[in-house]
Amino acid sequence: MLTPSAVHVDGPLSNLTLAYVQSQEAFISDKIFPTVGVDKQSDLFYTYDRANMNRAGDVKELAPRTEVNRIGQTVSTTPYFARVYGLGMDFGEQVLANEDTVLDVRAAGAQTLVNRMMIDRETRFANTFFTNGVWGTSVTGATNASGNQPVLWSDYTNSTPIANVTLAARTMQLSSGGFKPNTMVVGAEVRDILVNHPDILSRLNGGSTINNPALIQNSKLAEIFNVENFYVMEAVQNTAAEGLAEVPAFIGGDNALLCYTPSAAGLMVPAAGLTFAWNSIPGANNLGVTVESFSDDGLKRQQVAELIQVKMAYDMQLVGPDLGYFFNQIIT
Image: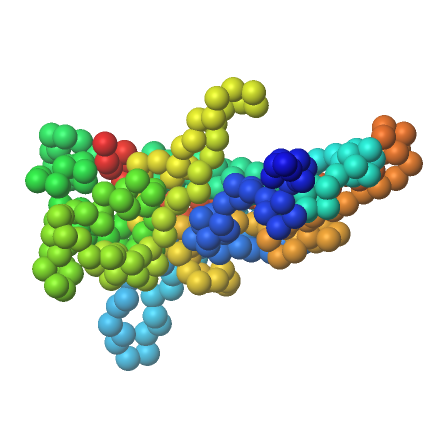
């Protein structure tokens, strides 16, 4: 009698492959601060003096036939330099000639490159903006807090995240010359703490509790914290070197940031941070990103049928430290 295994030879499915490509929605580095497209790799930008803009006491009452009091202006210049970052992947002639159609290793390779580049960009964002000591005010969460230091938000009994953010907003408004924060950014683990915090649940309709929480959207958190935008850094990176056991971690960590950011950069527009994207490189899009494919005699001599590379050219700069308030290690 024939058996099932005798009439079938196992082979890969033609309608299924698995690949752990993160959703683009997980990456927020290009959503927080405006992107400024630039033609040259380096240049300068002007900043007007904030203190002079808001100074009081120079306006005088005018007697008949008298002149007004005259004041001056002060501007400074700051340089940017758009560094070019890149990553590539080779595809051997024999590999492409022998691959199963379902694999489409070229397309998978391109997706891998983009995913890795986005992770790198998100990490550079975190190192530039989402770190302690770079903003006008930075505070670190503590178990036994004193003064304006916040109690760790993971302490559901003693912490007051809404009051902490309210104080931070008022502090920033004073130090920045009148600009309230309109954006809040938190690490994924911080959001998980906030959505179960009694302070947050008490602001929701329906009597939500820790044991019976409501489904809280980021738009509701924005409303509770009195900001226009609420973003979560939930992209994941593997910090282990190739060949070692995977070490996954959220790039955003246990931090939170309040900041003022305009919808677009422009003349006489303040911003906490900017990204200068060098988009005049041939093939670059408005974010300074290029995806290129090469196949030439030099590669063929190496038995390489094609080289795909992805490049990004940009400079992330914290340009308004007084327009940010940072909560460092705000949960445990």
